[in-house]
Length: 447
Image 1 (cartoon, one colour):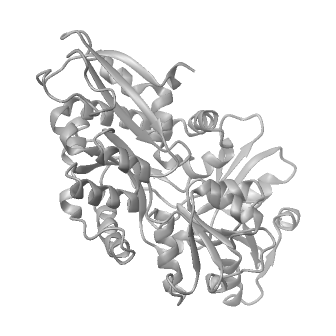
Image 2: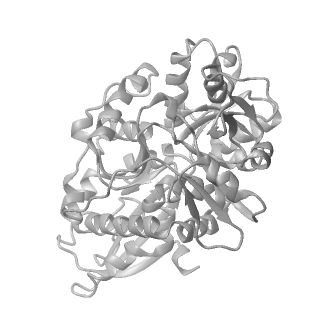
């Protein structure tokens, strides 16, 4: 489609002298004094970054914002989008001066900050894309039929993750809470998400700890079962937008245009979640049902560009984890976070905080979903229906999950769902008379 073109060329009003460095040094900068190139790095399949990447690109809002400044100086503006699987190559490009704006998770953002300072190409965190205040965007999964039931069962096992990612941080913290030493008690393998998924399927990895959308995708495909819900940590996790400091100073009007465009993409996602999920699915090849699990109306991710204090505080708590792993020496989070550009670009913008997730049903052939106040109501609605996808929140963490992949518990005529078997068993152990049932049995028995 037209919005998928590698580069779009638009006129732009230049507020700074043409002699200054234009866009990405060494990556298509100004060659004749009349062309400015901005390079944007994103992760198409890390779908809680879509408002600064996949969805934003497909909507063309960034290019539209730049076009509104067209013509006055006869300058051409060129936007180049670069897609990566993780945040590490985006950081490498930014710190080499070859990329201007990028989006990545909280742990990679800290590495971005550290590398930028070390290589004298400092960066700044200027906005958030998607977040979950409990940490539900990261999940540890095992292969279907695995004998592993708890994190403690991972002792001596091989676990695939992407070292330095938010999912790696979740794994390290979760293992410690389970009484295991992440450095000694498990064999951690550093792999790209797709490689780790293949390793899990082949049996060369016993578990996989990954970020959105891999756990949901593998569960949806019947290729994985959730072992640990990252929301059990009750620590915020998020993805955000980082910019090269030099570029932000030289081209503040371009950064403003990007942040305004991101705000518009956020509004689009929040007001038209099903259409947005379908759009992202088309662009990425991911099933729309998986995209909606994370980005839907009740989804695991909440989208809001604001640099909320609790997210900044969580970033500070992440620093010691990365220092211990030897990935950073230190990071001055307060110096890295810069809320001024967002306030300047979209003054007064604010979104309501996310409320408790509700069960949701997406019927085949429908372009809208139905929400329910209880899992029981969802089960009743599913009976005899042509279901495209049904979603239910975990009874304790609130993490949304596929209803047919969740672990169901019946307790005195009421129904509760859990992302993991361990979560359901904890509930049953504390509630006499309750019992675990398969999803099909829950649908059949609900009344």
